[in-house]
Image 1 (cartoon, rainbow, N blue to C red):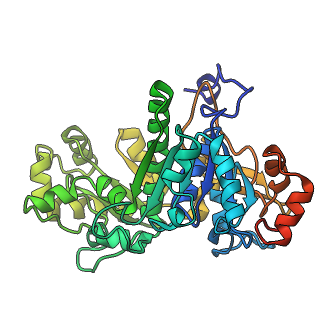
Image 2: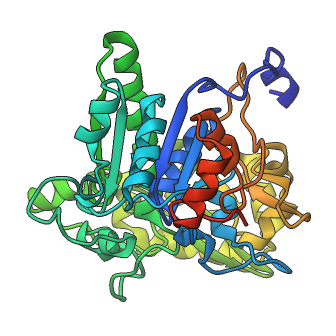
Image 3: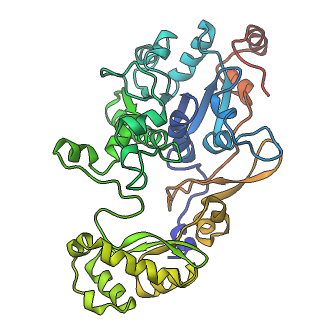
Length: 407
């Protein structure tokens, strides 16, 4: 399908499928901001509450060249508005409650009990707006024996058993190179918010949505917890694939490919290509049990060919294979460009930077990066004006450190 055909009935008058939804976000770092980022990308208005000094993502390395901006903040806080507000002070809390009274969704990812201690827990917001969907994201959840513990992404990866399965067979546990638990919790936070919003629209009932990093990883771990409970001990496989062979990362003359087969029909094609028709009748089970036989055959095939030769030949044969790209290679991949997965966005320092675009594509209500991440407190006056807080009152609050100086 051509891209133009997919979007032929697209609307241009709304920001996305969540246009008209208002989200108040009191979050930091990645999991909470990611949940709100998904909703913002989908067209919701997201008001991000930050302490006057700014949230952690504004300080996380690396920085964008020739600026004080960070990749993390510009990536996860685009399409949002920024209001600096000290939620720990009573007047800051009161402003947050006013915002929540007119909002659809409130997202927070502080340690359980923190916001309740500031007068901004679920019960507090429910009193101001009984239809509010209140999403809490934390390491271990709002209840349970470990719920009061600090829980960051690497802890969740290791506690959940995920890290023990990652890495080479002869090595030890390895965490993911990305914030896997934060990302998954952010996605489940956004999904949970939208499901609860659907329920609210039907019944008028708001609710508290509890998302844990640990739960999110366990849920997305292909049944590893069930296997463990049944006494089934999965093996660390590295780049090989437990349910198929041959599948691996193979060295070519000029780089690496990831290739292999799952279906018996694909194996029959590959066996002919490998000039081993005598093995063409091997079933998937045969190949898994004979991994040490079939894997070296594909490794030798790749060893004498370029990456392009292997990838293109596999495409001709209808077999799966891909170049093993580094992050810096993606900007040169035409497919990434056509899919709008890197979108040139002018940031607050005036230069354009290719930011990662939204993953979900909507034919009727397209999504994109509508605007860059805001500078700290960029929308203070706009938001406070909407709440009926006068300029004089805003100046007084700024003097007291309740709101921060935009910068």
